[in-house]
Amino acid sequence: MLFTGKRWWRILLLVVSGLFVILVGPSRIYLGDHWASDVLGAYLIGSVLLGVTLWLYLRLKKLGVLAAK
Image (cartoon, rainbow, N blue to C red; front, side):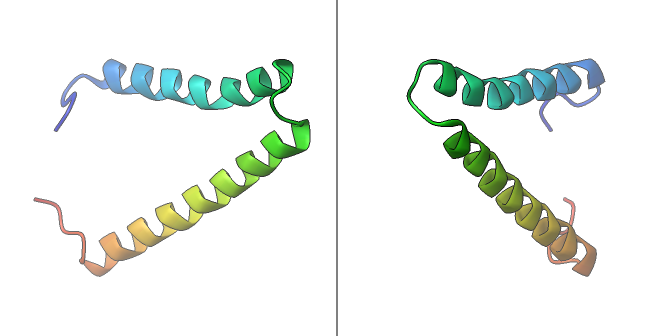
């Protein structure tokens, strides 16, 4: 597995990735490419899709469909 045993690398990678996701929206508003409602709508749709995907993953893992190797 990538970064096995190096917990701080995984945390750093998650934080940096999260910052990119969070800061792209305000930058699009600042540059005048999108309205605030567009960015908020995209965050909402992305959050719902992430939630559904995470729920499905955890459900399949619990049922044993996604067994660990």
